[in-house]
Length: 608
Image (cartoon, rainbow, N blue to C red; front, side):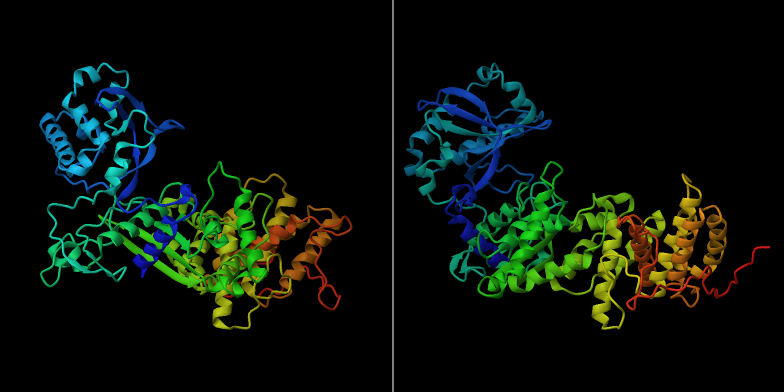
């Protein structure tokens, strides 16, 4: 199914009306070429032209369509009309003259093996004439030679006056593709296209998967006898035709390309996605939903992409024909010389679009002016990793969260575990962690069909859950301390957050006693307002529990975050920012200077 979807994607892109968005024809691949050897029809050298441009401190060569290359192993294997300088010119760059001579001979032998109809082409004869008069000593006098001998770049030929390369000339394109001499090729029904075709013994390499070999890896491969069956070898164990093998690998390499807008890195999984139609907003915008935009990119593009999808959903775009179109999400992970399929989703847009919107609705929470309204999955996962480094994200967490988003099911338990532990370790509830905790709790409430009220975007004074109330109370006590001791280096959060969120009974008696000293330092009006706030929060608490479960610790963090954000929310001039709000009947909660404390396991001590 995956290979068929990629094959269909290739067919669509190969026939795209815009040449810039068109994938190369079967038999061609796009490769970076460092130098062009320009020759005249007589084979005389005109110039050595370096391609590409500087990007930062690194030179990046231009990319050209060239004949599909062979799989490079420890042996000698030459490409047709393009390869490294060692193969093309026989330049010894690594102190191995005998091997280089063998490489150069293989390159020329492949050229000599072309059929007569191709060998008689003007470009091919010019290349043959160039090799007949090849003089490395003369080439060494050119100014580009030092760079060539140092970097061993890929090279190919261009005929003087032509825009195309010699390997792109019509005579070569019309010739049948050379086959692998070592292959034991069989004809069979292709499992991808369902048509008779020659079975591909080895599939082209797939590049761009994070952590995989730079030379490329494979999804379909049989490199050990243990993988073979019924005496078959290599690709004969899974008969896929030569054409399909090239089309699906070409499509996947295009999706995984560095500048592709159809890929994101989610944890250790390289994730690509595509739709069955062109110019689908979901295809263009999913990268901004899941990945982090580049630093030099417009930060508003991600917001615009999310809003465009939201508008498409609200306008009913996916309720009719457009909703039946399929959308594919494929997550790949490295596994030595192979690529592991970490996850694959194939679902209609009518199901996917509401789930994406549900994900961001669950994440929505009040933040600061610099916090993104729609945080990417990468940013959320990085907030849960030690030191905020992507390398410290648990390997499978990104895939598990992505699967929850696309399936519309509860987030993995590991997510709330990491979020709570990171809050306790750093004694800090950030915007991203609070958003993930809120999303996890709300999905858990819906999945369990409990009567608990879902958490809101902003402070919810009607939420009476003990964990949420205790978090609010802790934030209020910290606020009182900050106002009583302005400029204090470490507040009660640095010393007591971990114990307050896990074992409230052990610390809240002490914190409430300290708050009396802090309140005594405030002005009378301010003191009354803060005491009223303490009374409003503690009015919903029956006692201080001895322990809070992990989800309740998440509720504690969310209550603390909401209350802290509420302290800094601007209100009208005649409204005090810490005054308790009226309930639904228009009555304010009673003023209570101290909550009804009944600690489990430890009684509060009275001040002498």
